[in-house]
Image 1 (spheres, rainbow, N blue to C red):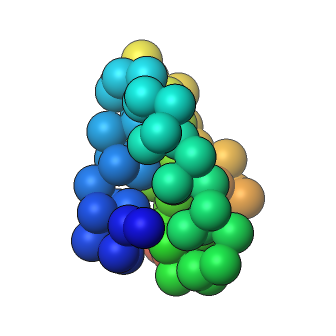
Image 2 (cartoon, rainbow, N blue to C red):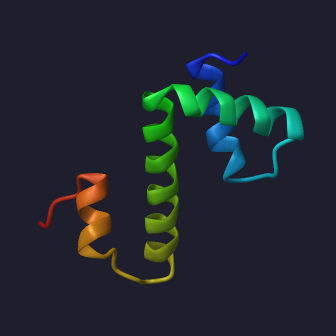
Length: 73
């Protein structure tokens, strides 16, 4: 079974490549039990989406800003 460090690594990698079946299963089991890693995965997805939008000139929505803790300047 993976520890939190291994899970955060896999969560990051899963945004860039398809994970193996065993990695996906181990990841799913761990994330079901670990709220910290579950939150990390959610934040990674939100940040990836927001940065992708920013790169093409879209401004993050108010909801996205509040989820990432971003403040208006």
